Amino acid sequence: MNIKDYGFKSNLIGSIDNNKMIARIIATHKDSYEIVCNNGHGFAKIKRGYYYDNPNSIYPTTGDFVLIEWNALGDSMIYETLKRESSFSRAASTSDRNHELHNQHEQLVAANFDYVFIMQSLNNNFNLHRIERYLSLTWKSGGIPVIILTKSDLIENKQEYINEVESIAIGVDVYSVSCKTGQGIEDIKKYFSKGNTIVFLGSSGVGKSTLVNTLYGKEIMKTSEIRKDARGRHTTTSRNLIMLPNGAMIIDTPGMRELGMWDAEDGISKTFQDIENYIENCKFSNCTHSNEPGCKVLEAIQNGELSEERYTQYIKLKKETEYNSNSENYLVNKKAKFKEISKINKENKKR
Ligand SMILES: Nc1nc2c(ncn2[C@@H]2O[C@H](COP(=O)(O)OP(=O)(O)OP(=O)(O)O)[C@@H](O)[C@H]2O)c(=O)[nH]1
Ligand SMILES: [Mg+2]
Ligand SMILES: [Zn+2]
Image 1 (cartoon, protein in one colour):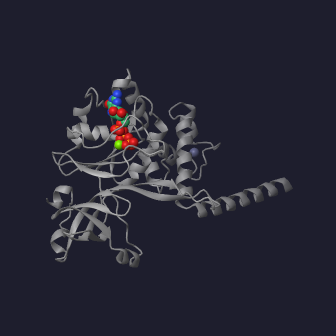
Image 2: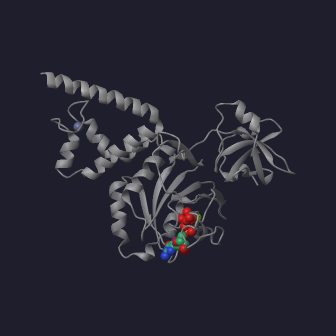
Image 3: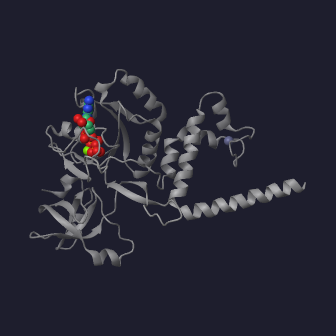
């Protein structure tokens, strides 16, 4: 086994001290990690003291490259998470009932991938606004998004769906596939070349693990018709990195129910590049796009170039990322704004 086959790209290997080596995290469990390294496959734990003493240290996730001290007889020790080339995070709710605010925290899903497969099933999971959310987070992750519409055998008019997605996902590749009939599978094989890592994201039951099995050519992941058991669990419960026989790697993930914006400002800009272009050309640089003359956004909505729905969604996601990334600051800013508005209103009344 060679760590470079697992996508490790830097030449750092030769320069680290004798006891330590590079490993890749291939699965994250509650209290331990599964790793691969030049010595083979094993399990590892975080070197607690080291991580606690370094406030800047980043806890690893599936796909991360880490510095370990190998232990052939038991758990290896993880000393450091190496710099990521890409990472996908979302905002997830903090379940703290005593907390006054509806708090959100960052949840890291995977690291060091080349492509993000955004997956929706054509029969009952198709939703354009959800695709916009995935796109915003993917553009900011550093990976390249590819949209995969699954279960094409269950519908008649797949091209119509593809066209719809292409109209909101400018410049992104969109495919329909079926693991039942094999439709579209050959077309997506080009992403799976040796050394590449592709992360599969999407709701539970869209067929992520089934596609892993189809590409592998063998049932390597468990799949299930029943979406969740009585306790609301998904079929896939941990994030696993799987190496295909040809040396490409897939990170299969459990379905995600909510996909909150986290630090996604730039990703939203890229996803809604069309709207940002209009905004740049508004006559006034502080245009609020509500009633100003020379407003390109209003113009585009009026002449049908831009749908009001798309603009509303853009504003919504921008507000959400601002709120989630810093809820306290957001509320302070909002209060200050309200104060200012009521002051202006009062002054207007006086006149
Ligand atoms: N008709 C049809 N069914 C499919 C296809 N792909 C997957 N399925 C079915 O969809 C169900 C869910 O598939 P999974 O692969 O377990 O879904 P998943 O996205 O991995 O779900 P989680 O692990 O819970 O996130 C299974 O019953 C599959 O047989 C397809 O192309 N066509
Ligand atoms: Mg699965
Ligand atoms: Zn404007």
